Image (cartoon, rainbow, N blue to C red; front, side, top):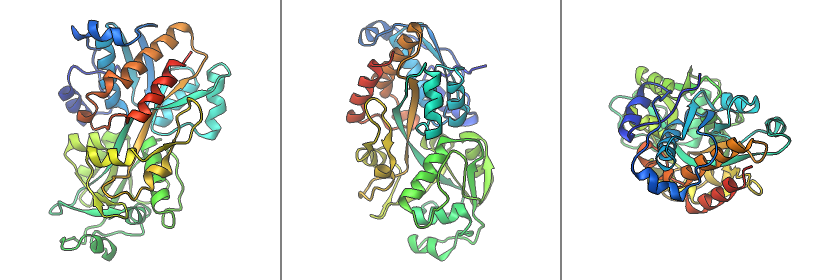
Length: 366
């Protein structure tokens, strides 16, 4: 059964996300809904279904609350099973749209078109979520790594924290000889795909493993979903794992700074936004696939490069009228009112240039 993802307040979201990848609750509505409804079309059926990215789930909760306020009675049931599962369920027509941290692969494009009645599916970047590298190294409160070192850690080429290459980037730090335990997502994950794409773009000579939703590095220990990675890092001295900023914040993980080639950059909303502003769209028309090399390969001073784009994968055409109306309504609210509380949930709101193109694409869904 699908889990209904919503919240009564941002604080409630943060608490529920710490212990589980499933957030449950009813859609909210308020007196503000009547005035907000005028700025959003509220047509279509009252309940939508979606499945996929755990990185997207906290943003979906924000959007669902905003939708219920703008359009009283509307609700999205979202099952955070991972990007791979979400795309599979979308193609199988078991959900109305998928949440994915990666655009459709070449071998999925035709299958998605068949699901959409012979019409292309579109990849719509709804929100950007920085990926944090949380680590468990008592006594080391500041740690700087770069893409080359991360690639070596997650392939097992560097195995202890006092390795000379790490020490060279952390002058004055007292690094122990503790064994490094990389923690990776053992389930099919768009976060894994984006992390590996980052390594390939920023350290192409070192990371030769490729990308994909399955971890290719060959070193470390696997954990299920975002919450599992957090728990494994917390429980394992010497561990380091990649997880969305919202989960790292909620669990109070200590996170690394990334040297992007122009110095160490702390993960903040501003440093992530600076990287996003330099990203380009490679897709055509209303298929808004991002050129990730323009994001992950940035050497802009002060730009935190490891930011994943969260997509909603929808049919451009092929829905029945009630479903199409509801999908347009939900995404319109998400792109407008829904952006307001994203920072509190660990995300970076849409830059204006992406928002304009997104709204144009949403309006064209049939």
